[in-house]
Amino acid sequence: MRLIIVHFHLRPGGVRRVIELAAPHLAAALRPRVTEVKLLAGEAPEDSWLGSFRRLLSGTPVVCTVDPVLGYLSEQRGGAGEAACKIRECLARILAGPGAADCLVWAHNLGLGRNLPLARELTRVCARQGLRLIVHHHDWWFENRWARWSEMRRAGFLSLKTAAASVFASSPGLRHAAINQADARLLRRHLGSQAAWLPNLTEPGQLPSPRRTRFAGAWLRARIGADAPLWLLPCRALRRKNIAEALLLTRWLRPEAWLVTTAGVSSADEQAYADRLVGAACQQGWPLLLGALRGAPEGAPSVAECLAASEVVLLTSVQEGFGLPFLEAAAARRPLIARALPNIAPDLALFGLRFPQSYDDVAVSTALFDWQAERRRQERLYRHWLASLPSACRRWAAKPCLLACRSAPASAPFSRLTLTAQLEVLAWPPAQSWDLCAPLNPFLPRWRRRAAAGRLGVSEWPRRAGRWLSGRAYAERFARLAFGRTNASRLPRLKANPAVALQNAFIRDRLQPDHLFPLLWNSCT
View: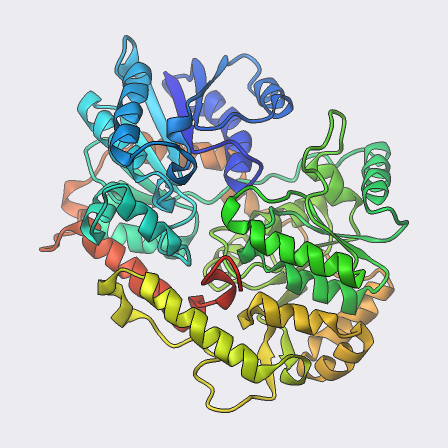
């Protein structure tokens, strides 16, 4: 059997990490046996990553086929009709030729909406050929990515119904996988046994050697140009990573430390955010380095080695599908400071993981930024954001928490501010902003004392986590989803189109106040 892995690109990030961790286990455990792994993407990975991936799959041939038509539609030339024809031709070469019947297709992030013609054509060709297709959902186009709606319309998907038909397609050999239980419950409610929960895998392997750890620390300190403690944010430069909050916490809790992110900008949508953040850091002298491993030469440290060399790992995201750094920090035995995300906190608890430095929000005094200007800014951005939604969805959108305040509150969650207001807060000397905000966050003085003494808590890796997160457990769940029989008696009986009803249920949920963050309304905030 050939395992064909489809993704828009193979850039550094969570999806690629799941592919590289899971593929060796799938190749070893699936029956019928995997005789070849084919990577099918719109953009090639670095040679070093592909070489490492082949070594991980030693004994199983790896073929990488790159065709730009499989990438983000917004990054391609030509019209949507031309793109759809090219996608059909590409998929016909791969999936409709001799030996195609022995393929298992594992497609990632089709629900992101970056190339709906690919989602539509892939599900169609797999249904025609009778191929098994696992559609693996990591992110959603309707989850604070409403700019995708105009892209989808330009690609010919003019209604929510046509979008739903491509994202939540259904056929005998098609299965949908979600990476957290909250999403999986919604999928199963509408698609029954054609959907399942497939949590990402992580295993606490052998830690990097002391020599490689020292090398990673020295390499990172050379990049920042200072002999300072390293606080690591393992991520790309994305607005949803809420990087300014990680910088604020670093400056408050460990003033000597530098905040370092592993990857840089990988999308044009995020360039303005990264540029403003870096520009402010350079102007103000803030200890921040974005993209330490971006364009790194051969022999540079790995992410695992950077984790081992860091004093603390942070995860300040406002939105995650799974939150792999939670697991990676525990596996690396490094202290983690992280926002508790409501959609994944129950899953982490089920795995048996406990995080001593987990918080809901960081409150900041409204004296640290221009409240009236921020309210006007949010009102303007909210109106524009609301207008970008499909007209049928606008009535479902809730009021953001700060716009619901009639007068200036004493404090506000830092994560609910625009980048402009966040930078105003960061512009204050850390000692002064700390004096105003420490009483608002009773947990922070305790963490500050622990950080100074090197005693921040580390999450122990629990024994029962292997039941959910090991490579073996992942392969078993994947096999059950791919090859298990669908019980027709358990399929939901809905009068409405299941795809439309399912998408509407997701959209209603994502438009509630808990999911509304000004950082994500516009690429420039």
